[in-house]
Image (cartoon, rainbow, N blue to C red; front, side, top):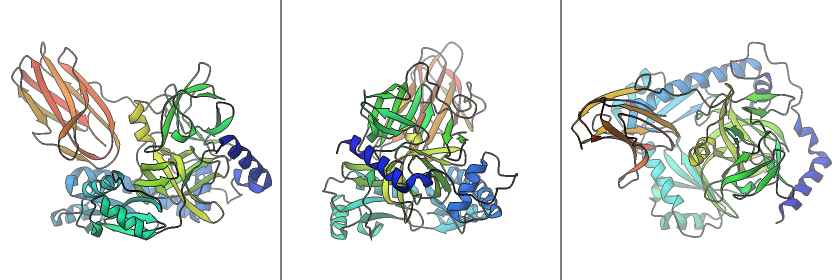
Length: 485
């Protein structure tokens, strides 16, 4: 379909009665002591869409902030026994699933509710990967995702028989999958904007997602690599759809990317970073058709089948959206989460919307998110001190060691892995970051300059990682400082 026709239809629909959705209805004024990083507009939208009073919003946000800290700490401490986490009871309870009975007390001591399950988080991700790689026809299948609350994978289908056949052909154990009947008919929201409008080619309109150094990220279905834009003027330097649904636009001189999202209430929300929010956390979306709407995250790493093909690795939410909202910003408080991909339903009866995670876009194109400091996120350590972890070793010329401590570490979330290596003066030590592919270790980032110091920065998805330190020439002791999501 010609997207210009879709644009015209949306304009007519807006004139016919959707204009009122562009502003947030009057609400009781939020208290002056709103949580840090949460604007009055966001606070009011959370009151409206989560049906809470001011005290309820304040308590929920405080619970979510506390849960985020506990979850991050436990995810790192539990390693491969971690099996997912979620918020419930209005975000009052954080449940952390584990596969080892010996970890139960560790979870309880940290302030979370433990749940012993059969499959680890890594196991669940492998199941999704198996479905993602499935080659059979997917007609009648809306999508699939990990449901951490039941320690299984959910397949949404209009045709349950087709779903069962798809699961079998993908080689995924049937007892690990729950097929749910669904009338979802996901589609990309082509005729949409997020914070601000931009136009592709002869006038197709889409959305700015989040500002990055040199431009902005957006939905991949909005334009192909090489397409030109106006208001702001720029060029698509990368685009991927289906499979993924992401793109980035490099803007021309005279355009100034800023770390802001339009809240459709006469102001903006400032972006402070891109830390992933937990399943069950509250999020808000900005879009030109329906304005600013909020809800919660239902799942991560969801796959969804559009008429154009399947898109993997999405955030599934119960935030409503309509044509005209695609490509818009999904944000949790002040933390960027993703850009609107597509979904089902509307903002009158409710619906399901999927979002392309922003960290994956940053990783794919090597981009830096602009944040409230006016530039990229806080600069990482430049030496071997100040990192989250520090290890050391000693090598003879030509030798290699794997860190941490001859082993590996598990990262249960997407994000940036950073490391600095400091070798003896006068030597040439190199550093490699490797990720487990399911059958072998593969290099995903490296630093091999002709010197004794190296630095690696890599934004990746959940999985097992390790560092290889190689003494290209020279011998002696070294220090490796590293941080991971």
